[in-house]
Image (cartoon, rainbow, N blue to C red; front, top):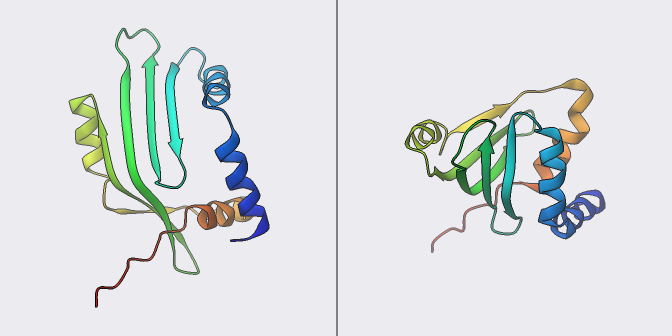
Length: 129
């Protein structure tokens, strides 16, 4: 892992969840309110709880086992497991889980995409002997 990605990884780990929620709520003002958030870099798990503007009940989403797969020329995002407390969202998530989704090549964002690909590189499966 490069120095740059190690530095970003450390910054992600040290950023308090309350700060993430605060910034997200500034960005999402009038759309949704982020009420809870947890991101575990090592286990690649994310939990998000948000309330859409005008709605009474919160939506919860759990992602487990996500990675970026690279083949040298392109990058793809894969999510191993995802679920929600809403049936309609579970139906939507079931359509993306386990599939590789190509990350579009954006010429002026190549460096950032490469950094993200390095940070969330798929772990190679262990071979059984």
